[in-house]
Length: 158
Length: 85
Image 1 (spheres, rainbow over the protein chains, first blue to last red):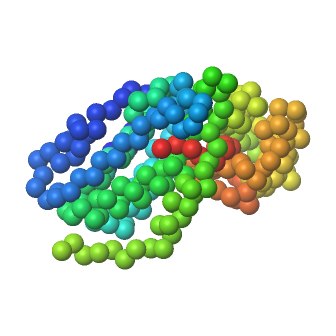
Image 2: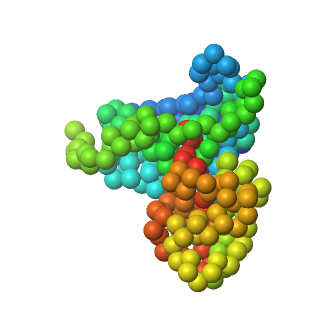
């Protein structure tokens, strides 16, 4: 398991390759990259600043990776989240889940991402022409995390 | 009982500092009571804690609810709902 909060960019392909290097038991790798979007509506975003709680951000992400590992038979997970000032088009977050089978890798990547958005202590501040403001939490993100509340039976890998 | 308090995002901006060490009075025994006491300190804290229901808290880097009990030497963080990812 790899969890990093960093200012610098990441290379999604290189991170995925590092996860599977030298292994033959991994049959599926799902790589999700979240990117800073410039135009959610008519007033374009000039930049976004991400603030995090050092120590707790890593700990909270690790807790959710451990929860994912309890639900699906995972063979590797990498999460990298950037902080600092980012411009539209730049990478924000990387989630990679590796498993023997694709369903487990897809589900675990979505699970980790949903909890990362609502539980990892990270906050975004948008800069637009009209000024800067802290982004408000979305009910849709809470709902996305809540859909995992019913524990899924851990499937046997076939 | 001395506690280290951290603030993030707009709480940090409204209070004007990222952290402070304070010694709350004995009646402050929970996270919620600490918010109540902090809100009465000055105008900056009052602005930050004006709507405690939207504020989240962590004790020693773990999410907690307002009824969580405080102990000396802990690191307590207050922040708005999270918007990472």
